[in-house]
Length: 188
Length: 429
Image 1 (cartoon, chains in turn red, cyan):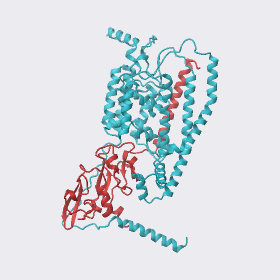
Image 2 (cartoon, rainbow over the protein chains, first blue to last red):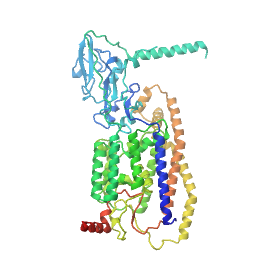
Image 3 (cartoon, helix red, strand yellow):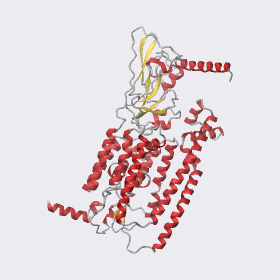
Image 4 (cartoon, chains in turn yellow, red):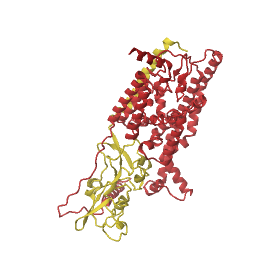
């Protein structure tokens, strides 16, 4: 056993070494100075399984449907709005695909209709996304709304996502939006 | 490949790409005549992601905690700060990000140079450790929301038998090791996944987690801070720091009078009694045991490593790819009639089963070496614990255990010396 006068310098030495070690290791980790990142869904990978509605720590989910107007066909017969085999093409509840009636259909000019998402109602189930992907341009898709998201360290939906569609992106980017250029006809 | 086939292949790829591009747009964008304008997309940016405000609150809370424990020696003060932390870091900020979880981000960044840790998370990881290096585990005392929720339910703590305590205290090392293994192999963040109290903070979690949290809280009524003592992986790091703390909390402000009142006050079994005057066994016997243990250490580490290697297939199930591959194999063998959402998605994707199995093989191989390291680490931990138990440190007074003490300040008011000082002080003023 060491005697008492010896003990404290040793402790000091270990303390300094520990501080250096922790600081150094962490500095090494931090070297590529990371900015804040947020979770987002890659619409190209999403398979509309419906787990975004059920696995978010928030209720209702922070995942909402987003509508890229610039790639929408403004169809009268909208696969995202109307149930397959709907009786009429109108705003009747029995014709709507959305379980919470979060899509608003407005007439613009013959034969075009605009579809708007009411985010307060949307639960992020992705039913309309599936419909639009199957029969339309894919202008409806799911995104994490960054003002609602609580930015969990490990996103509970990302953990449950079967398609590995969640990833962290820089906070200032925030969204992975579909644009005309990205999904459009081959550029070359 | 000849030049012609190469050109043909290139053409095929181009056609495929073009077809894919067109497939997105079955319907052309309309040209409106009524002067219609597209509405703006509502894509608000995050309000508070960098959490630097939280890091500042954390620093302030740590400083106040250290001041309350070491200068004021005030249990009511510490408890008030505990309640504040429970409300702020727990219920208001919903327990995320916390220093306990931040160790995963830091581990990931250390292991993978491509990953960077945001500054706020770095502060969350470092500040409590730095404070522990100087003032002991004041973070545990009054700042950690997980500790706080257990602190308020500890109504009737009973002492845990020393032998059981020593064994249970090894669990956090295993939890830490498995967590780092999970991060190193890309299996996700286990601490966040199995955080038992975050469900209370958010008022929503899976049934099993709420049940686990509830059971821990009920257990916490009789066993002080069960999560902190027997599970918390960050507590391991804090213990490493507080072992060398410069000004750790001291039970008595003056001279210990050996009254043993403080041991009754400590709900966490963190007070060490003085060593008896007569040694419990001849010195020669103790030295021999220590020598044997030191010689055995490499053996224990090697056995640990071998055990880790042998259990790599089980540990590999932490990884979603392995779970998916096993599920697909079982489904193909006809063990399950139904598909899970994961296997359904996989079968609908363009990835082939062979590719999945190849990926699973790669992941398993990755687990092999890392599991062996985990086993060796745990072997080393066990060996160190045995050696620590074999070494008798001479203690003349009742002392707070540097590693186990969470600086809750409960023992301070029990100390007669403290009370005498307080009386003298009040008479003087």
